[in-house]
Length: 243
Image (tube, rainbow, N blue to C red; front, side, top):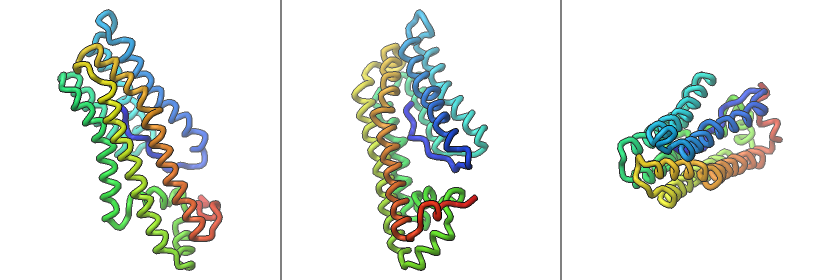
C-alpha cells in the first residue's frame, strides 16, 4: 500500500500551519494504522486474514475520500494511491504470486517517472507547472525579469534538468519499492504471515523510501527556486504572488 509521496497543494495564507498536521494525519491513517492492523489483528483469534486486510485497506481509501471532499479538487496522485491500494487488496484476496506485489509497488512511481519524462515533449513540463503556479509565484514579473536579462533560454534549460531530476526521484522510489517488497514479503498472499509482512513493508517504506523521495523532490524545487533568484536578480519575496 505504499503510495507516492504526497504532492503539495496550492496554499493560501493559513496553509503553512495546517499542512504539517495534514501530513501527520495522513501518516497515521494511511500508513501506521493499516500496518498495525495487519501485524496485530490478522490471526484467526482476532479479525482473521481477510477481515484485517479489508480493515487495513479501508483506512487509506477513507483518507483519500476525505481529502478529496475537503479540498474539493481531483488529485491524480491521490487517484494513483487509491488504485495502488485496490491492487494490493486484489493481489491478497486472489492469492496471487507475491511477485505481482513487487511489480505493483514499482509500477506506480515508475509510471509517474515516465509521465514526468514524457512531459518534456510538451510545451509545459511538469516541473514548470509545479514551479510556475500562479497561486504562489508572480509569473508575469518573473518572465519579464528573465526576458529583460536575456535569461529565458537558460531558465528553460534549468527546467529541463529539474524535470530529469524529478523523474529520477520517482525512478529511485520505483526501484526501492520493488527491492523492499522482494526483501520482506515472501509468504503466500492471503496468509496471516503475508499480512504481517505487508504491514512491516508499509512501515519501512516511509523511512526507507517516502522520506528520501520527498527530500529529493524538495531538493529539485530548491534548485529551481535558486535558479529563479540567480537568473532574474529578484529577491524571493519579489517572486511570490502578492495575493
